[in-house]
Length: 143
Image 1: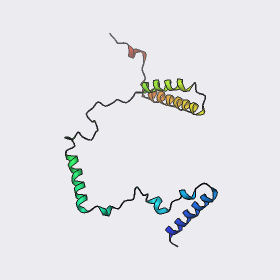
Image 2: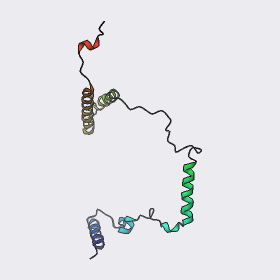
Image 3: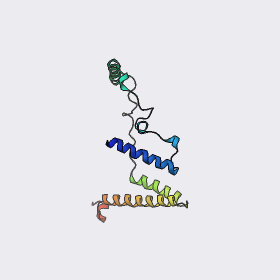
């Protein structure tokens, strides 16, 4: 037996089993061909001839060449870059969220509170690793 035919029969048996259990309605079933090639996505490329393909490629190349004249590609590369938040800003946001969530009696809220507490701890550990040791005389100038 052909392996593809065998698999198709197995899918048919599984679908029939779902219908018999009431998990699938008969009118909602579709065959393998329809499942793999939905109506809206199945179109034949043979309808396009070489002339159509040539014009589509040339139009795309022309659009790329005149992109600056036409306003670019909607990506503002020259605009100001928004800086990343530093760890203090993140801790302030986390603290605000924890204060809000602390008053909600819901398992999801408790999980969010726990995760944000873990994030706070990880941020503090990462920042403490970046610190360098100092001594008292580092803060005074010798004259």
